[in-house]
Length: 309
Ligand code: SF4
Image 1: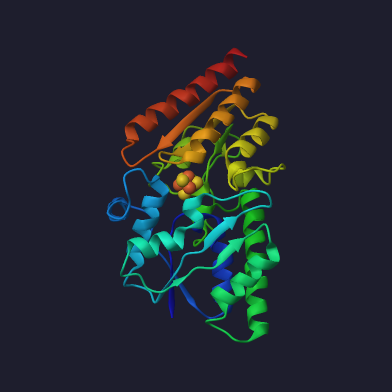
Image 2: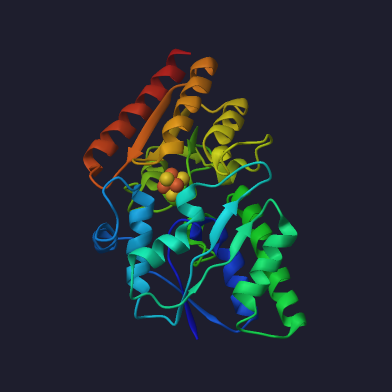
């Protein structure tokens, strides 16, 4: 039995948990290959133009797995925290897929609501685990291993030992210089850690002498948000500004309604703090040369400000 995992969207949050869970059940996981031009082109065939780039890439990763695996893991992530809601596209992901691709293998599509931990665990057991084991002790061990792995990964990311880009390649050290210019780089993990979608943003910043502080490195942000992922933009920017970063880069995807609102909140926070802010909007047409020029100009400006100060 081989279960396919699209390297997109919730992969960048939950893969350590899924890997531990299915490992305990003796099931092989197959992660789609890293994103490339063919992934995008495959995804574009199934998405309307207005869909956000991460969704288009998600479709492309699913196409890379069709025919290669027996089942596909496509959880419906309802909420990441109490009092918040997730993006409708991510909640409806299994239904969207079923409606657009007639040749899919069977989906494993548990509803995951982290605001109700007990219910999330039950859903995990019943919908994802029960088809592979009827032994309650085995299922309990698998769930425990999943939560332990999830928490351990978050800790490792906060300590700078792991990034979501390397969830299926643990042991690879993140590339940034710890003593570089501290700049917050805020956004959703599938935008920050897929080097195809963002033209290797984090590696380029590291080469320019920047220490990019991402939401995963900044750690948990206090406060209740409306959007489940709001802390990845607004909360992370607020925390980074409190810690004295010299600049903020907000990375958002074209076609994302919530991000279009949240990026204005980040801009407002930066204005109030007197810290330079740059918004990068990712879409399938954004060119590498333009991005590099903007990054170099932004980092040069941070250096001049420091020299003047
Ligand atoms: S939050 Fe935005 S970028 Fe992410 S899937 Fe939803 S619409 Fe797309």
